[in-house]
Image (cartoon, rainbow over all chains, first blue to last red; front, side):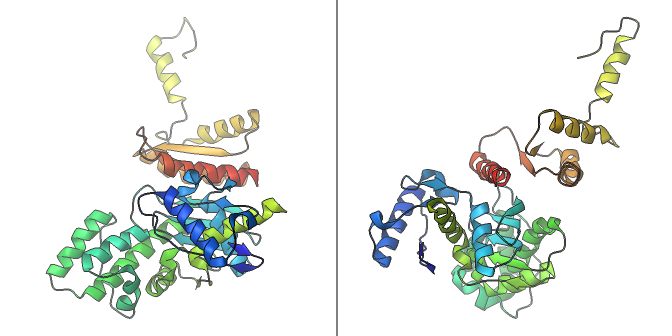
Length: 239
Length: 106
């Protein structure tokens, strides 16, 4: 939400109903900011739930919203790498946030936040703890791309007596490599702008830097870059 | 369709027809680039969608050259999709196709 130039946001797990979660998040955010639905000039929905939101004026894909949000946050173009819960995407943008080209992972969970979630559960930790556990550790080789097979591989490594922290570092490296093999088709870039929930993970930032061989920038509000982009599109509609 | 030429052997006519299809299993397959260029011009295309049926590796490999040709020679937006006949990935495809249309409209 944009209140003037101020960015206000609220993050809520979608659960099983994107429609209900969307409405709830919208209402709670309005309450937090202290305004009524009448004060809102325009609403743009994005993400997988965008088609099920009834209160929005327009739906824009997360590809364009992430591009727009990222360009706004860093003020220049480049390659946006977004790793979210459902998918990962690489978007080549110019300075104004215009999408020049994009690519997404296929319909499997490998190389996404969901992958990290599954592994975290198998290791008995929360996703928010992964970064601290993995920093500075010696990453183990994870050979499976598939989330289900990788989970079995992790369990085998645990049975072998390997350190949990080395396994997590290995998992991070495997996600970073997977995402970069998809993103690298856009050729050498000066910098990578890392957005989405997984960008909050410090060790993932390091692993993506190693995989890509170029500086990785994680601007403030990068987790909500998509929502910010949607708000910027909404502002375009008003003016 | 096979050309009607009474003087030609039926099998030869069929074989010639099949061999002229610019399928990615042919090598080299320059006919595909010519055909895409011709069709894009004829229909004044705003973009090119390259669809690969899942597990068709030759089309997947060729997508690299098609992307390069469409973007640098035809100067058109390009998207490569990989799917199968099931409907399980409809929403994932919707994101890609919608984003592609937004890219064209921008």
